[in-house]
Image (cartoon, rainbow, N blue to C red; front, side, top):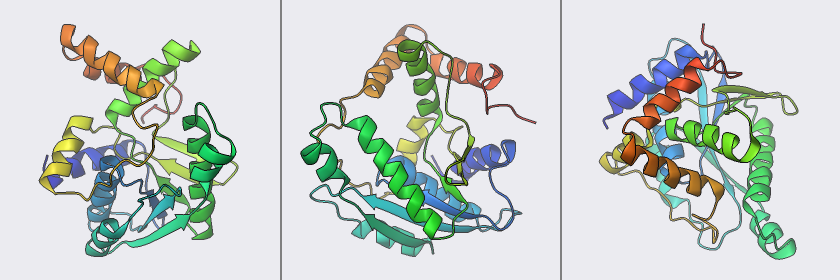
Length: 239
C-alpha cells in the first residue's frame, strides 16, 4: 500500500468522526509494532496539509523487557520531524516476577495504558492516538460476543474521563493486510516482539477463527465491519 492510499483511509476516518481539531496536541503510542509505526507515519504526513493545525509527538512505554532498543524508532521520528520520548517503567518485573501472573496480558495492558496516559498528560497532550485498525475492530466485536455475551466494540473516539484525554483511532478503516503491505514498502523499523506471552491470547484465537470462517465465506471481514458501522453501536454513529 502506498502512502497516498493510507492517507485517504486516515483522512476519511478523521473527518467522519471529527478526531482532530485546531490546536490539538496529539501523542501517538509507539509500541514498536507495524500498526503504531504506520499510524505515526500517516499522521506526520497528514499534519502537513490538514485544515486544522495540530502538534504531534511520539511516546514509547519501556516495559522493562530485556532487549528493548528504540534506536531505529528514534531515527524514524527524526526523519518525520516528530519529537520522541521513552517512558521507562518496571511493568515487566511487576507482572512477571513480583506478581507472577498466570494470565499477564490484562494487567500488563492496563498498567501500560495507565503509564502512557499519565506521561503524555504531563507533556500537555489533550489527545492520544492508538493504532487499532479494521481487523482489530471486528476481532473486538467477536470477542465481546463470544466471551461477554454482548455486542460491543471500542469507539473511534473515546473520552478518557479520569484523565480528561481523548483517545482517537485514525486507522479504523485500514485492513491489517494493507498495513503489512505499507510496512514492507516503506521498510518501517518494526521492533522484535519481546513479550514471552506473545501469540498466546484470546485475541489470537479469535483472529484465527475469523481467518478460518473467511475461507468458507469470503468477504466476512468486510461484512462484519459494515455491521459495526450500521449496527448503532455506541460511539460509531456518524453525522
